Amino acid sequence: MKIEDLDPQLDMICSLLSELEIEYCIDSGTLLGLIREGALLVHDGDIDISLRENQQNKLAELKGRLKDKGYKCRILSFYGQKFKFKFWHAAEERAIDINIFRESQDNKNFICPQPFPIIKNEHFLFFYGRKIIRVVFGIIKNISSEFDLNDFPWRIGTCHLTWVIPKDYFSSFEHLSGQIYVPKKHEEYLEFRYGDWEKPNKNWNFRTDDKGLSQNSPGIFGCI
Image (cartoon, one colour):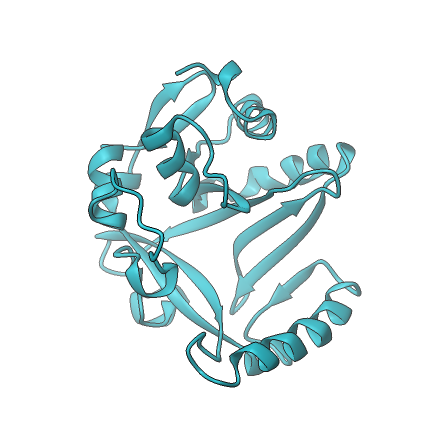
């Protein structure tokens, strides 16, 4: 696989991360698409990037570089600890999600909060509740670009689950092609996350089927 054959937006962000000497890996649906299909998944609206907490101080420069390219940024925190930088551009179909992983208290895993609407999809209030929350939060989001989701009003509509990734996968990253890096033992990692990852599953649900996603709050793992 050559980076020239890939999506230009992915090429751009991977090249920029490498230029800034940020240690990272592509992750989640982005990793699944490249390894299984050699391309980004058509239905995936995000480019998923993961990095360890010790790289976080370099993200200010990345934010500046992407701002020069016309990207907007939103930063999400969990009790004061930044865990997600989300970049988007009006001319691009995909956002860029950069997730920050920290070591768990027992030093066995890397963990990262993952916010979800507090009303689950199967609840009859989900459709209308989500619409109301999105409208209200959308107005507030225009006021600032950095939020702690445990502050009001975010906490009334948001709950946090936790990505819990064994350290063996994220202790170091492997080179895939061009400027692209992937988790260590990436095929084993995909099996850990998705099960039978080589077979597309149209009914796969991120909230319930991702084996790397714990239903527990990040606080259980020593994230705060």
